[in-house]
Length: 245
Ligand SMILES: Cc1cc2nc3c(=O)[nH]c(=O)nc-3n(C[C@H](O)[C@H](O)[C@H](O)COP(=O)(O)O)c2cc1C
Image (cartoon, rainbow, N blue to C red; front, side, top):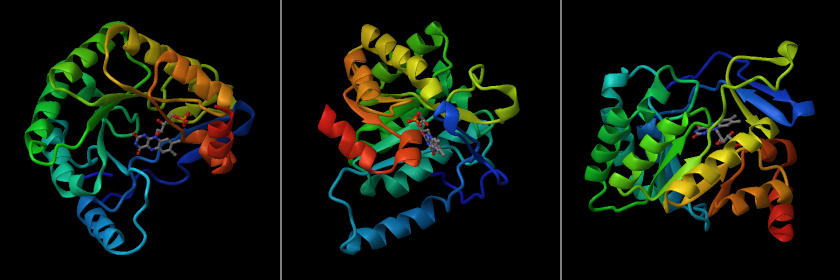
């Protein structure tokens, strides 16, 4: 979600590539904005409907907010939503909001993490940072150092990729690629983080079955995040993976 309500990209904006077990999406954070979402979550919490499982809230930058004001935009959402979240994710890696990935650079990330830490002194929610798979080794080192300095609770690796080289040109679309073609790249990033840091990692990218889930755990991940396979295979997939693991 984002601070301001926004419609996202024009439709169509999600493209299925079943032969590749992949998706390309350019949703662009279509959502009702932090105020409306806080109201909705408050109503849900006051009803019988609040889930027993932990709830994570993933925050991105509003498209209309200039990059220089990104910190205020995230801080606004954080203040409204932290009370509902068991953990909060700062998404600085969606490819579908212009400039968003620049927030992975050390000065910008450090400013963002300091501002959120400042607002987190009383609530003390675990803060996680979600990163792109398309980082240079040096870029990754800088992110890890910045996360460590700011006592970030974990890194989610990774978001969707802009590397579409595995997709036949007639099927290609603008947007972030997820699913099977992302699997190896995201596992490599998980290994690279684990080799450099003790920061906990939530692995995401191309988990389709128990084998690909095990690959992420063997890479050192503590938790797994699944999106594309959940779209193709539905909730039974989770039962299958947990049973086999
Ligand atoms: C339709 C769609 C919407 C997504 N929206 C978000 C989002 O709002 N925030 C975010 O951090 N990641 C988002 N992602 C990225 C996924 O959470 C996940 O990290 C990525 O797709 C790789 O995992 P997968 O291969 O299991 O899909 C989205 C992915 C898809 C396919």
